[in-house]
Image 1 (spheres, rainbow, N blue to C red):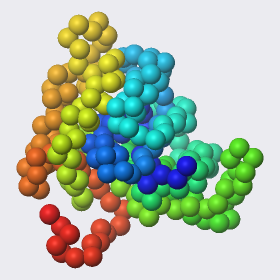
Image 2: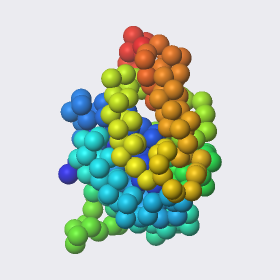
Image 3: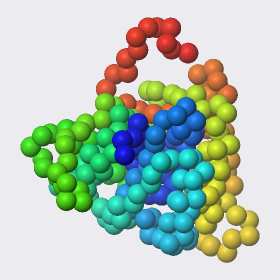
Image 4: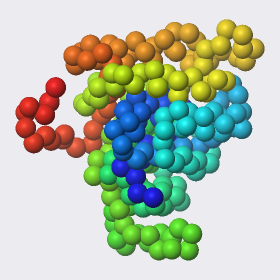
Length: 238
């Protein structure tokens, strides 16, 4: 299956938090979108790997993505080496996305920056013909995405590209809150974490709204880029 967009996250819920509105919008526009989670989030303080698996499945259904896979890398301990790169290269060549979305280049959680560089490196290497990979007994052809964009996570990194997600913030929120064990629940007996507070849940909405204010729309999501963004005409810009 060829995809238009393939979104990677170091943990289940990274993609929903970082670019859930963008994904929901592109799916509504008829684009085929997939999600690849690098780990099962097994080191998370709240919930378990098994609850995360189910929550990720529920979130994928809410967003309407075509496929979601988990590479089961070691949460907290995966590294950017040949073995991990090759596994991601296989996914890139399998789905042949035009655009890859991935973690923030620098963030509070160490897996986010690691995952960002790992996926970015794999996107480049996937285009090299002399790197040979095989999937399900078939030799894969090289494939390099046209663009790699990094969504914004915990830190307020200055965006270099924004997407108007007005009309899709409710879908984004629903996909995030599908992770019931992770986020604010006044009745939960689980330990408190930086993302389990009501302030964090509220911030998902108000950060998108504030970024929207800055670019003249109701809600927006921001990304950083690896190369200059080009348009055919100045009038393509909002």
